[in-house]
View: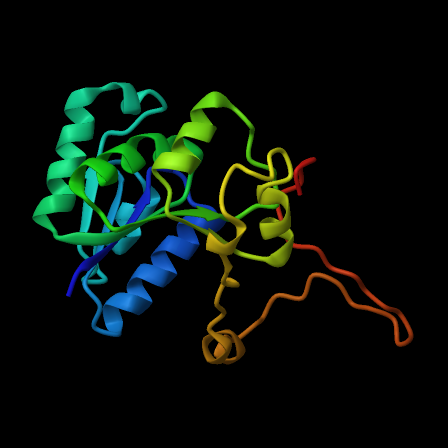
Length: 201
C-alpha cells in the first residue's frame, strides 16, 4: 500500500489546517498509510502529536522552492515513505512539495483549493499546472468554477474534482452547548455567518 502524504506548511490554525488534521486522522483510523508533513512550529504538528498519525516537521518558507537542498531532502522523505499521492494545500507549498514529489516519482500530485479565488495566470503557475500537478481537489462547485477563470487552458477541467469538507454529524450533535449569545424574539429570523471578518470572506 502506497502512502498518502498531506503537505501543509502553515504555522497557525485555520480551515485548511483543520481539513488536513481531520482528513489525515480519519484515513489513518481507516487503515490507510498516511504521512503529514508540516512546519516544525505549526499548530497542526502540535495537534497531531497524540493521534498516532505519522508527522514530520520541517522548516519551510516562501522561498524554500529555490533551495535545492530542501527540495532533495523532501524528495528523499517522499521516497523513503513510499508516497504515491501527495495533497498540497497552498500555492507556496506547491512550489516546493510539487517539485520534490515530481523528482520522487510520486504518481498523484494533488493541489487542494479551499477558497473560491482564481489561480493567477503567471508564468510559474502555467509551468506547475501543466507539468507538475496531476489533479486539483476543490471544496465546492464555486471553488471549482473560479479555478480556471483567469486562464481556461491552465489545467484540464476533467481533472478537477469537488469533495466537500466532511462534518462529524454525531460528534457535532452530541456536544453540549451552554453559551447563549443572543435571544431572539418569537417571530424573528436570525441570519448567522461564520468566518473571518475580512474582505475575502
